[in-house]
Amino acid sequence: ILAGLGIYKLLTKNRIQKVEYKAVLTLIFLVGFGSLLWHATRYSYALILDVVPVALSFVAVTYIFLKNLSGNKLLALLLALLLLPGRFFVSSFAQTDIISSLIRNLINATVFLLIILWAFRKYGRVAVEGLGVLAVYVAAITVRSIDLQVCPDFSLGTHFLWHILNALAAYLAV
Image (cartoon, rainbow, N blue to C red; front, side, top):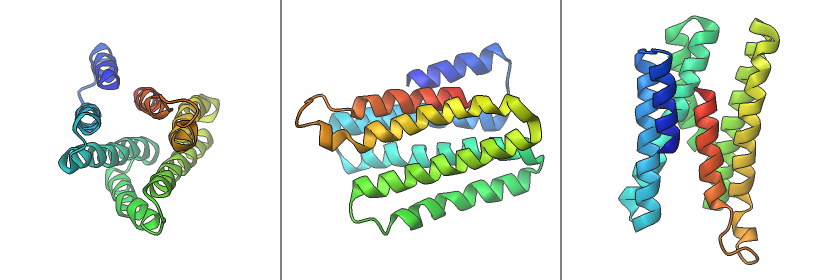
């Protein structure tokens, strides 16, 4: 929810009115509310309200990056949409939910790294800023992945850091 507020302020300050940015903003708010609802209730519908906006926000942000890099809206849309079933297909072979989630997040990180490399090739050093966003996202993946191992010694766990770092990465990506 805080990432959504930050993105809203960023879009308003820069007078960005493009529909794809508004879609990302809406999806980020939905991620926050879905996650809050899931952690508060543990109802299966709440998990869907958490997971679906996360996947769609990944597609939307990927679309924006690809459109800006390629200048081709249709190509960007097709590539971004192909990632959605691709992530779930590859992660469906995992033995546990944690491994499945880790695989999806590593696919996300790999896609963003490839986009950063493309941006570096096209724009030069200015694209290096994307590495900072990627580093925050990788840190989020790391704390999410070690949460169950840390909980016996640190009862609070690290899951809350996943949410904080993931929200920061979303804000920085926009």
